[in-house]
Amino acid sequence: MMIPTLLLAACTATNVEGFAYSPLSLRPIVVGGPEATTTSIHMGKRKPSMKERRRQRAKKLPSATVDRGILNELPSVDTWEKTDASVGSKRESIPTCEVAEEDNAAITDEEKTSIEEETEETIAKASSLVQAQRKSVDCLTHVRKRVEESFPINEAAKGLAEKGYFVYDGFLSKAVDADSENEDTVLGDEMISEMLSESSSMLANDKMQRDITRIADGEFIAQIVGGENYVLCPRLTEYVVSITRHLPPLLNKEYDVIGAGDLPKLDSAASMGSLRLYDRKTKLGTLSFLANPEDAASDDSVSERPFGVICGDSDGTENDSRRLTAMLYLSSKEWDASNGGGLTMETDGQKVEAIRDRIVLLRSDECSHRQEPWLGSDDSGLDQASCAIVHFIQG
Image 1 (cartoon, rainbow, N blue to C red):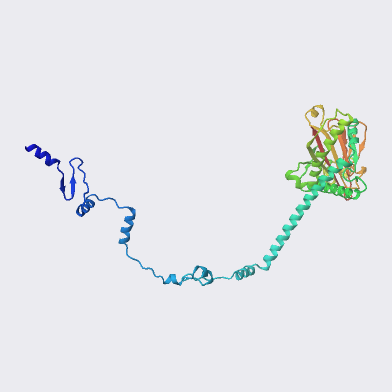
Image 2 (image 1 turned 60 degrees about the horizontal axis):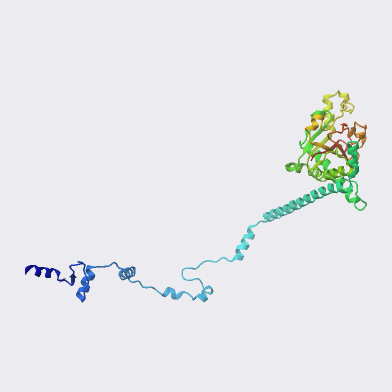
């Protein structure tokens, strides 16, 4: 029959150029034999690997020959630094000693002198700074010792409770005991002299203001605030700081001991420091404009001052935190009662002269007093005097 023959022929695999086509898959299948292998690679070419690509490129590159003569001229590793420089690497060397000599020769004698002067100046500044710091510590310590070791705190507390004021001489210069008599006296006198000198320097450098309430009295005032102004009056600043730190705690404790409950406790962390200076030349110059020519050189033209309390009237006391005032008089050793200054107490009429190193404590809110005008004289050292004032505030 015809149909079975065709079906058999269709189902029979046909071999064409080494490939057998299956009627089921129609995929080329590799068969054995050399011819079949060559034909199958050509027909089913695969992508070459990276290794094969490198080999192919290497075959295409031209061959290169290496001249080993240069390599043969190089020394071995262990003798490299002992031989001369290699081919093409010759360099000129400059001895370090010659360079140093050239640098030293470049420094002239003038430059050496300048360097030495700058060094000496730096050493001098450092030494001066160290001495200033030591001086500051000595002054702070000295004031503390005066308050804690020599100042009669019990008598001061009783005087403030009974009379409203207390006067003590030699606050900074009186010897504590026989062993320290010379040391304390010298240090105290030096400190007072420096404080007075600082007052005069501040006036000369326009760091004080004219007291316009007493325009004809030749008096100037300034605040002692420390900080940037410390350089203007270091000894005055140290005095204010140290006495503020050490006097109020002792007074507060003594108030409790004597039973003075009505005395206000004081703050040991804050106070108000000020400076009052008298200049005779300024006073006489002012009087020459305000008074008659014949009275210009006379001290009789100064009017008498009224009594009063530092805090003012009762209303001022309520709004003022000042409760105790310390006045330390700074003047020459020759200053006496005839040169004026000082205070007069209203309650008992007591007169307190403004002699050197005298401290006066008075209650700022109750003690009525009068500040007497300064007089001085034309003699050397008696034309100026000052007073360091510390207001202790309520704690």
